[in-house]
Amino acid sequence: MVLYPSMFKKMCGCFLSAFLVILTFPNFWDHSLYPWGFFLAWIAVIPFFWALNNANSIFEGGLYGFLFGVVQFLGILYWILVIKELHPFQTTAWILLALILSFYFVFWSGLYSFLKIRKKHPLLWAPFGWVAIEYLRTQVPKLGFPWGQIGYSQASIPSLLHLTTYTGIYGITFIIIGFNAILFNDLQTFWRKQKESLSLLSKLNFFKNSLVGLIGIGMIYLWGRTAIQQTSTVRVGKVAVLQPDINQYAKDTPSFEAHILKDLQQLTNRAKRKNPQLIVWPESILPEYLLWNKVELNQVVSLIRNSKIPTLVGCLDARRQGMHFLSFNSAIGFTGQGRVQGVYHKIHLVPYGEYIPFKHFLSFLGPVVTHFGSFDSGNHFSVFKARGFTYTPIICFESAFPALTRQAVLQGAQAIVNISDDSWYGKTAAAYQNALIAVVRSAEDGKPLLRAANSGICMVTNPFGKILVWSPLWKFGFWTAPVIIEHQPTYYLKHGDQFAWSCCFVAIGGIISALW
Image 1 (cartoon, rainbow, N blue to C red):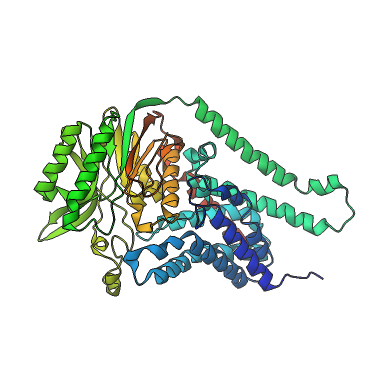
Image 2: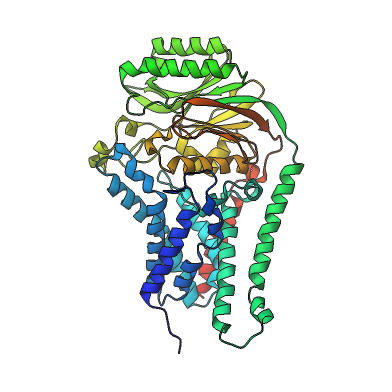
């Protein structure tokens, strides 16, 4: 007779997996771009697989997916609790978002259990299905929120990130879940046979698949390392990224504007001594609608002319549309002579942070956000020129979307400039999580990442996602690094999410086959 584990033990397995996943990212006690727990991703899902394999119904499997998802996202997204703009709804927003995101795992776990009941090799299906749900939650119109994908746990390892030049972030997710599935299958076989009188060699033979998987991961790592070493790159100049560390809650005070400009002038004057080819200011560092405020615009233009260095400025912008004005979170590219090259209006806004989706039906949520909840969305990408290279700006949360960043780069940019203001998150791990997501965009598209953030993290990477320089949080200053480009476009840049689509088709095919 088979003795099934109690439901309590299976729930504990879900909690353990969720906790291990949390540790793979920068978290509540590990604030770092190199989280020590990154290696846990390769074993983190095993207890979850164990719980699912012992579930007795689709409903029970879905329950375990819900528990795994909600605990995982509560831990990863704990920083929502410190966002003052959500007061007094921080806790509500935190729990609600975790609940919504957990339903992706309810769906995946339910399908896994369905395949198990039909004896259709659920472990073989698992990595394809996992990639499919991660892709789905990235692509949901307006409400897509891809934060916390397990593939980002390896963002600090450029040799592994080289796989993303073909598959996007989804390839990393696939091999992590695939290895967890293989290792769990071998452990399961070992557990079943452990009471038999077998030789040590026979027992070790149970782990041959895991050994093959481990060798495969090692080969991917060595392949990436070799490919990076053999790829020719060109240094085209230097960039300076500014971190003025402006108090977010004093920024909108009229009397504080002179202080902001004074700090920016000080940092710009110090940075120009390093002779960079581009200076990058953070997101919305100027609270005014710059092109509509002639006094402030003249001050900024004068500052840039004095430096003689092309500058990207994060600010607000507005456009007249009939009898109304549209408001945008923007980035303005200036030449070294102070002329406006162009304006980029942020395309993918933060739901309930920069705008309210379906606001006609959810008007009661209006008080949750300040005037930052009333932005309009831009409709085109921009490419600006620095001395020696071109770049495309993406603003804050946009770096979480692989397809959006890819479309921006395809306009002809040689570098990605990500401007952000992570001061909303206080001294939590959110800024580190956000920065590592942007690092993966650099590797996917084979372009250097030049990132400026008001309170941190500023950073510069090479085209392979290797971090060349980065700033601590809440430190006034500027950081310079070489801009290194690779001329050959990556496979991912040319062809997009083919791998993710392939996983979706395989996952759907697995479900259809189980129906027959």
